[in-house]
Image 1 (cartoon, rainbow, N blue to C red):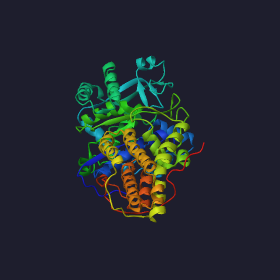
Image 2: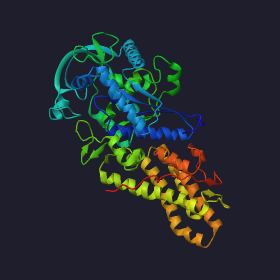
Image 3: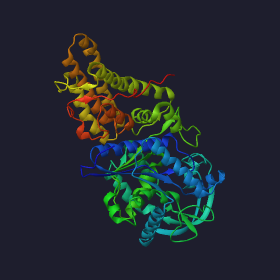
Image 4: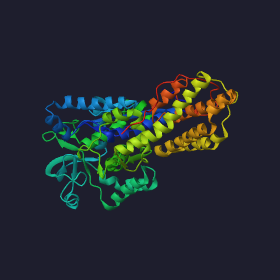
Length: 513
């Protein structure tokens, strides 16, 4: 639980909308957990947050997947979309809006956008001869396919030749503007390696106009093209507009003006080109502001292979949380790799991270501190001194300084490392102080002050961990006898002067292999 916004700052964050040709896997969960952690972090700073996620439900692939499953297309997308929203609930994702591209409001916004572009003269009809990849729903030139070994340049699968009349968006005329915008705004695409990747692509390829329609006779599942009833809207053009249709573009102008532009848009690096080239040009053509930043994170791999539906090596998040719990999974994904880099998924790494950080360092610290509070003080800790121990001061101040800055920069791994550096010092404090000896010597005042320092440190750790492992943070607060609310203004020493303990089961039992 968090408090009412207090900062006066608005923050709009998005994930991509996930394609519903199959059920969600660990890659989908990773992107959504990233966004959820940022949304929670911003809320705990007092910002007013709008967090958008959802599902992409149109296109030829969807229709083929529904046919293969022996289901009506709408029934099929309803079922798979529900799988996504249910999974987000199970892994603690607290979005503000779940958009579906089959929503009537989205359809209206897409059609309005096309009419605006048509009125500007940015859309025309032409005969198109090209090579088409059904899995990627993308057209390619002869040269692009030849350079990729006569396969799709993206997914390396066979392409088919298509010649048909379609409607086109004048993407190419905005190429000079986009190149200049990227040069003037080097932080627009993050991390820097992805910015360089987009710039390299633009330097080596001349942009072609974007085909934004598909004949109903060939595809037949999508949004009706508003300029011609014989066509539907190209799925990628349709999908990208979800980021503004969810805010009321073309309908609720007050809401739209309040939230747009987005502050950060997260996605995996394989759809960076759509978001860093198509999307800003579409916005420019619509005379809308650019998002403040687009962040393309890396892939999770098993060995050298990307985890993906097409590779057949998916990791089901539901299976993983059965083994290590929701917070174990969230912690592993955000701690194991710096955001933006690829991560290697293997069970040994999962076990080592959960056992070392969560069971040994955090879980053991909390459990034995609460045990000592019950044993020595009957669960009621009322110290005579609430100052911070000398051994804590430097590392505590370092954590306070680093944590906010690192989280603001989306460096979850380093932010968590700063927290666990403080946890290690707290565990060392127990070993150095030897409270069992203080008890033998009946130094009751010293024990109370010692326990208070541990409990106060644990409380602050729980606040800082709440964006990443919210269930665990809430459990810690309950066990400290405190409200399950989180506000970074409360992460100051001696906020509470005493504690009444309500111990629960250990936070993270060790995983035995």
